[in-house]
Length: 245
View 1 (cartoon, helix red, strand yellow):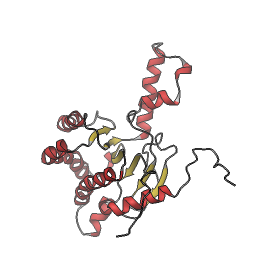
View 2 (cartoon, one colour):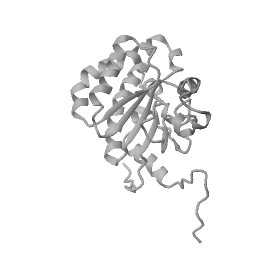
View 3 (cartoon, rainbow, N blue to C red):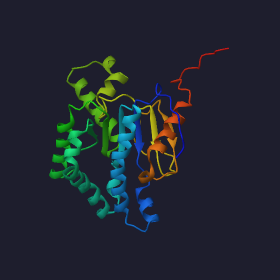
View 4 (tube, rainbow, N blue to C red):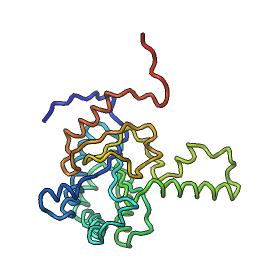
């Protein structure tokens, strides 16, 4: 393992992760795709622990997109049932941790049991003050921004706001992630180099990091590599770097 020295004063506050490559990881091992998803899900615990120890405040995890419903029915069924099984097996562990777990995404296509578990997890961890784990499940940025626009349009229609009240800050307050800071670093595993409709508003000034490593193999060292890359970049937020000559 590489000895990566990080600047503890320059740790990204909010890291977004696109958890890609579970199926291919399993295929390489001659196992079904669901095996890869299971390993990937448990890797979330490890990465959350590592992120927290490094001083990261929040992580957003792209676990199931609004487009993933088109995948094979058996795979979708497994992914919809896994959170229920995971919660039942790990409830005490979650309660003893200091992680605050929230979910971002649509909730109108979940069955009653899954929705009940999501609500329980959020309720039981809402007072936790440690790392915020944002599970993006049935999430799509286009859907999120569309819903925000509808809510704001309704406020305007009811004369509760004026046109001049519609600002980036107001829009941000109507997103699923309204209580989270903007994303500092976005990581995508498995070698794919695209955003795939994930947190498009929130990553406006994020640094992007792509790795060939499949998600189940994304460990502490890989996380440090990503943060090290982040720390070597100059974040100007659209401005110019000050001339130090």
